[in-house]
Structure formats: structure tokens, C-alpha cells
Image (cartoon, rainbow over all chains, first blue to last red; front, side, top):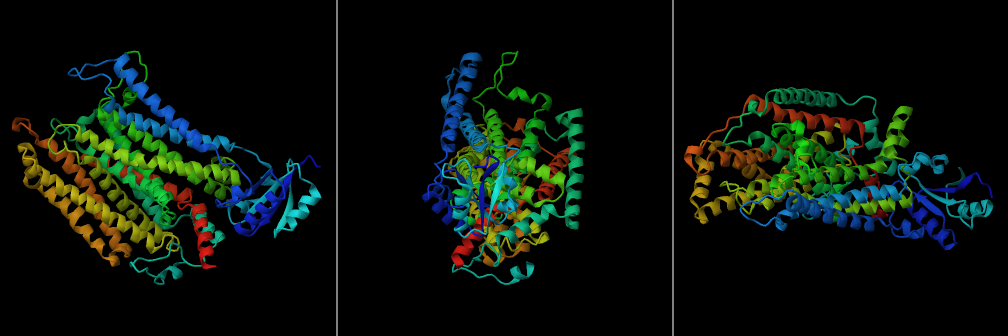
Length: 177
Length: 462
């Protein structure tokens, strides 16, 4: 196996062909692969055998922290640290604390969703080998790519190339590291 | 492309144009159409004209703010009893304009309304810029804006904390959250398009610049999966957020006891008004932009029609709000409320109230005609009338109510000064400048979402 190879990249004309190819590759037993598309293709993560993302969990955790932290901050400030007696009204005026609790819930949930999705995607990432693929710039315009990576246990430069050639690909090329 | 769109598009049984995309579009053609605007060597002449107007007004803002910082808020027409004046009128107006952006990008996404595709990016940008303009006003109105962080909760050496039982503090959090969430939502959607820009430009430094902001996006299935999930969740979070922001703004009024403010109808009435004026602003921007950049093939008549429909519905809600305010003033039997209503309609500011009725209630009724809804020029004029009308509405609520509250000896009168007008026009300049820069340098229509639309149209036609 060539250590300088990231994988083999097949280029497709339509998202339907890519979906078919991904499904076949998954059935064939490949597991280290990724599709590159100019728009989110419905069903592609499932066809590639990807697990559901953990972004929703992060958002939930962020929301809970934001809400609890927001209320705690208001309580600390107005009950413990700086109590103001206004006409003997209760210091822990929970109905009045709701708007900020709500806003901070949303704020922290949204920020953890945004930063969490970037973190899980390992972005920002200044270099990635797939950009060495010829015409890869079209992956963000009108072409659909499937890359079977060299670290896949079933990867074999010749057999994998033959397999990809049999999938209606326009071209198959090696991706250098 | 303009030839294609000039053909009368087909109408559905309900009488609106059916197509969201002109026929014959491909992935490459939509990418080309959209990216050619920021990648053009020189923008069209009308861009320079618009930018020049915006930039001059922005300079006016700098002058007005500098003078304000030097002399204090006394340069405005505000005094007791009208301490709020233009600053709060403008704040509420700008925040409301922002709401249409979130409505289009978040609520319509959750409702699977595909007609958001061609307009969501520009309207989200509009939201950001409108909120930036809005945020300036409470800051400047503080009197000493250079210590604005005193309203934030932090353990300071004076041992003071904000009073969290006050709606004015809620505003800080609501507007701050709204801006932040709108920004990350906009950026997350923009990320794949920045990658397209990186791959399309030829100049090296531009490639690096777009590449820097694209952060290495490579359109992998994993990337898309997480980005799409996060985008959907952000839309879900932005939906209650947008409803809460104008509700919190309306609490600034309704929690007070001033007649004309102290009313439970305020939150829904403010939110409807916000979406109403926001859509009007979207149309005021979109109609010229669509014409200048020949985007009729992407922003089809269907979009105009649907936006006009939303305006019509929210407009009726706002009209109902006006009616109920008057009705409750009479039905509630409170003397001060009754007087407030009479003073609004027949007092010294009566002419403003009646122009509000004409601009905001009478004129928009022409939107019942589907011919008006599909006529860009008429639609532009109606939207303009609504924009002015909504500003006037906030003037009526803020100023007329404050000038005459309970005791006649405490009554007063408010006349705006030239600096009030300069600050208002100045923020229009800030808004226009940012908008023109955005149109010049970033794709103003979501390219990846338009490609999705192309793929779906193809599937249907096959």
C-alpha cells in the first residue's frame, strides 16, 4: 500500500449516481469513505453508513447550561449580592427573571450548535488532501465525488480502482496526501 | 436570462405564479449567475450611485454622533415628559425591520416553504444590518455611551448589579442574543457558498481571503450532515427568539403605566408589525436589486407575490391591533385611556395619526388584487408606504402617549431637532452602506440551496 495516498476519488455527473455508488461501496464493505457534493444530498450520509451526528446533544447541553446559568446569575445578583427592596416585593421575582433566562437558553444553545458543528467538522482546517484531486473545485459547483480512503481495511489500489471504474464514474484519480 | 423571465409564467388555480426558478437552470448556470455579481470586475453604475448615497448618509451619521458625544443628548428634541423621542422610535422601527429576515430564514425553513431559497441570504444580511442600526440608538440614548458596559452583569468594584426586574435590562439580552444568533445562523449558511467563491475566483489574494472565511469547507457528506443539522436547530431556536425579541421590546412600553402603553395587546401587535415592516423593507431592497442584476430568473414573480401575501396578512393583524386599542379605550371605561385615544386622533399630533391610518391601513388594501402583487413597481410603492407607516406608528405610540399622560400640568410637546433627523437618516446610510458592500462582495443568494432547488426541479420534470 502506498503511504503517500489519501485515497481514490471517483467523479460523478449527478447526485443519483453518487448515491448509487455510495450504497454499492457500503454494501461491498468499505467503511472509510466520504462523498463530496455541492449541496446536501438527501440520503447520502445513510448510504455511506455514517452515524447520526451529535450536534443535537451539544445544542441541548448548551441550552440547559444557558438557562440554568442565566437564572442563577439573576438570582445571585438580585437576591444574594445586591438585594433591592422595592415595596417589599419578593427578591426572587421569578416571573421577571424568565425573559433573560429564555434569551440565555437560546444564546448558549445556538452558540454551542454553531461552534459544536464547526468543532466536529474540524474547521477551520487549513489543509486537506482531497483538494489535491484534479477538478476538485467543481465539488463546490456541479460535480459529485466519492473518495474511498487508503486507511480502509479493504482498500487496495488496483481492486478499489476497478471497483470505482465499474460505477459509472466519469473519472477515477489518486489523491495524494 | 431577462428574455426568459419576460414570458408570462404559469399561474396556479389560486392565481399566483407557479415557478420558483426560470426553466433551463443547471447547477453551473445558477452558480455562474449568482457568483458573477460579487466576482464582476466593476459593479453596475447604479451600484455606485446607491453606495454613494449610503456613504454620504453614513458620514452624516458620524457627524451627528460626534456632535452628540461632544454636547450630550440635549441636542435632540427630548425633554421631560418626552424623554424617549426619536431614539426609541428608531430603535423599535429598525429592530422590527430585522424580523422579516429571521422570519424568512427560520420560520419558512421549518415550514418547508421553498420560496425562501432565493431571498433568505439577503434578508438575513438585512436583519444583521438593521439590528446593528437599532442597537446604536439605545446606546446613544444612554447619555454616556462610553460606560455602556454598566448595563452588563459583571462583578464590578462598586458592588453593583443590573436590576433584572426591569424590562430595559431584558432588552439588552434580547437584542444581544438576537444579533449573535442571527450572525451565526447567517454565517453557517454562508459557509458552503464561501467555499464556492474560493473555488471560483482567480486572483490569488481573493482566493486566500474567501478561503480564509470558508475555513477549509470541502462539502463532504460529514460536513453537510452536521452543518444541516446545526442549521435546522438554529432555525428552531431562532423561531421563538424572533417572537420573543419584539415582545421584550414591547414590554418596555406595556410594563409602564402610561396610557397608550399599558396594554396586554402589545407583544403580538408588535410582532405582527415587525414582520409587516420587515417584509416591506425586503421588497424595497429586493425589487431594485432583482432588476439591476437581472435576477428575475431566480427571484421569480412567485416570490414577490408570496411576500405581498405575508404583508397583507400581517397588515390586517396590525389594523386589528389599531382597532382593538381604540375599542378597549372606549370599552374599558378608563378616563385616561379614553382621553389618550381622543388625543391621538384629534390632538396636536392628530394629523400624524391619520397619515398612519392611510399609509398603514388604507393603502396596503390594494394588495388584495393579485395584479398589484405581481407588479414590481406598484409593490415597491406599497412597501415604501408601509415602511414609512410603521415608523409613524412607533412615533404615535412613543411620542403622543408621553406628551399627555395623567396630570395636565405635566403635559408637554415634542419637536424633533435637525440632529434627530440627522441620526435617523444617518442610520439609513449605515444600513445602505453595509447592504451595498454585502451585495458587492458576497453571494446574495444562497448558491447551495438554489442548487438543491435545481436538483428537485429536475427530478419532477424527469
